[in-house]
View 1 (cartoon, rainbow, N blue to C red):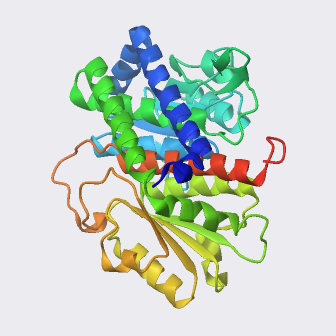
View 2 (spheres, rainbow, N blue to C red):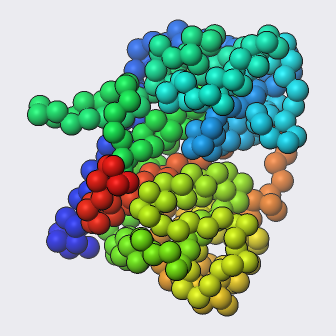
Length: 375
């Protein structure tokens, strides 16, 4: 990629670096207050020893992140339930409720916490507001920056509510890094060391992916393609993924709606039309279910964008655009893998995908001249 093309992605690059810098700063802040981290880990370890359940709580995009972190706790042998789901577990004494709320005042989340307190559960919370209702009801809290604002002297990270668009996911994406660090800390048996190893792996993988994708001409093709679907109500954009990639696809779909994109859900799939767009997110690139969806999209003459760590497969080669994102080291269909014993899975691919797509949103919003209010 020549320098002119790269400069045209300046906002994409600055957005990505801002998200990474926020995560790194939060990791450092957590390390300066090891008591909160240790308390988080000890409550979780006690729950595992006593066969208590972790109940994940979050609304909207925070709920998507809660789902990913919760599934990662399952991977290392915890009993995990998702609050509000049809098959969630009953809350019992000394269970753990892990809540995610940027404001700390979300009615759904605070009501769920209150319910868990009535059942004598322990409460762990990620929030940006230490004076909030959620924070005050918690046994342990980790504070995550809510956003940033620009001052004459430069960039200031803030823990109060300020306009965040088009980067509206600083809190959630930073929470994912910190949450996965805690999962790794609990799994490793050394909370601080495991936390720092886990968060470092997440951030290093993301930065390596960035170096690769910023020089890929397909990134600009993706940017151009997406703009064709902005303010276009005749066509739909479908984000699809499986497992925790389903959570990421939902997360990103909600963000792209801010670009005035007609985002369709999987329940709308039967209404697909020629020239609709399918954005497929699959680290392995080999899920049989998703590959079948791509074949159907191809027969329907839809446009296809495939985001994967393994862009070489035959079915992916039929896509209009392929975005190669590092993170997955195994290209087997996850449904065909059998885990003999619990083990840590860091969502390197999933985290980086969310970073890349969020940074694309920032670039496209600038291209279209969208203000914060319009977004």
